[in-house]
Length: 192
Image (tube, one colour):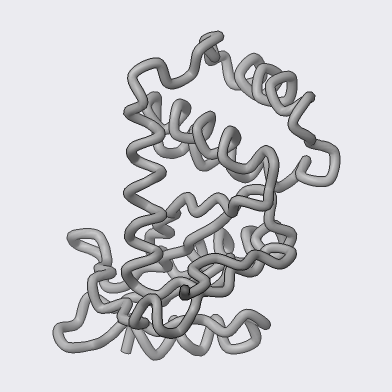
């Protein structure tokens, strides 16, 4: 039987026979020359380290950053944090992304028992409310499942997985190496 998921400290390893790696379904948002697409887990240490660089690159190049939630099964609070981020997304994408950044900023302090208090503090600081039951109809969970499904279909094998996507026809998305050294050069190439 094939092993579909084996997780190790923020890296997700998929059996090479399980999924073909083809990110060609990833597209830049309408009107954008290029975009940065990132699959992340809010409890992943590598995601925490990459997030400020990804955000800064979006600002520097004036291109959108599209974030997909990909909580890993070995992380005990990342899925709930993704649900909370999705809840804030309903108010505005900026608020949801601000919560994701907040979770990364406090990642080393957050645990399953205090995540809700961190989320409540974030909500109060942003003059927002957070209901007792965050996703009663399961709509937000379905959105996270869609993100995970997309990641699996394109052959995701680690988090963060970051792609530079050009809006030019016939230009495939390019995955940024995990060391991020070539990140800005890859964006330059996508924009040429």
